Length: 185
Image (cartoon, rainbow, N blue to C red):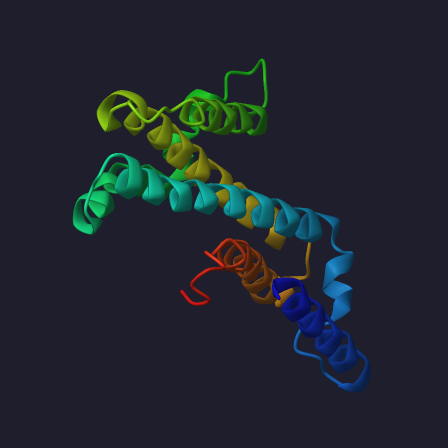
């Protein structure tokens, strides 16, 4: 059903771009390689992070037996590092021997690898808190450079459009990973 929706939206967009004299999203903007790459990366990264939170919700409630409120509070330590200023927290990741981007990917991979090793008998504090904190920290480090990449390769007059497309890619990644059994948010 999701593929049908995406295909329909794509078809309407192509038709609108051919028919409209001033399309809402002109295809010429996708000639910018940084914008297209940043959108693809945002879709993939956004999907992996939000899928992690989705499955952690089931783990908290189904395996650890947390109620909805306690499960919500279990996500709190993951929310704060993703909103820290990337220019302040990125400095230790720039050591001269490797690029900051490589270190961001390493932090993300470490967090995901660590959190993938949880078992039903593991505790929140001992096995989920630190790796999920690392994942959220890496997310905060990744979003700002992606936004910069998306807007730097386009005309100044199209920067708002480029930013909007990037945010749409992130939202589509989140929406595409909703539980299909419920059919709603």
